[in-house]
Length: 89
Image (cartoon, rainbow, N blue to C red; front, side, top):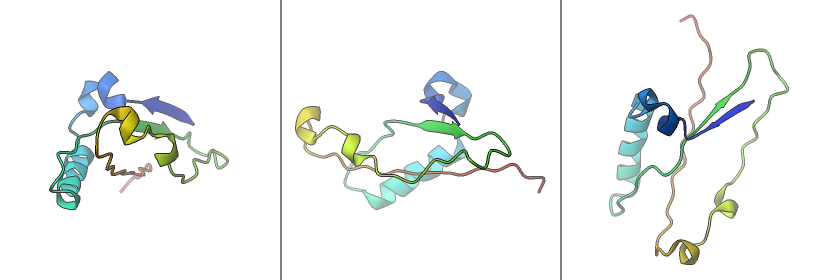
C-alpha cells in the first residue's frame, strides 16, 4: 500500500476535484451552523492483484487532540472515503 498524505497540497491539480466539491456540499448540509473546512486529505494506492493489501476500517478520533489542546470549543468532523477501481466501462 502506498500512503500519500496531503496529496492536494503537494499535487495542486488534485485540488477542487469533483469529490471535494461534493463532500463540501454534504458537510454544509449536515452542519449548516458550522463553518467547517477541509483539514486533511490522504490517498491510499493498492497495487493491482495484491489481495493481501488490506486497509481496515477504523476510528481516528482517538488520535485527535482534545478541544482544550486545540484551543477551540468545537471539534466536529466529517470523514469521507471514495474507493476507485480500474474499469473499462
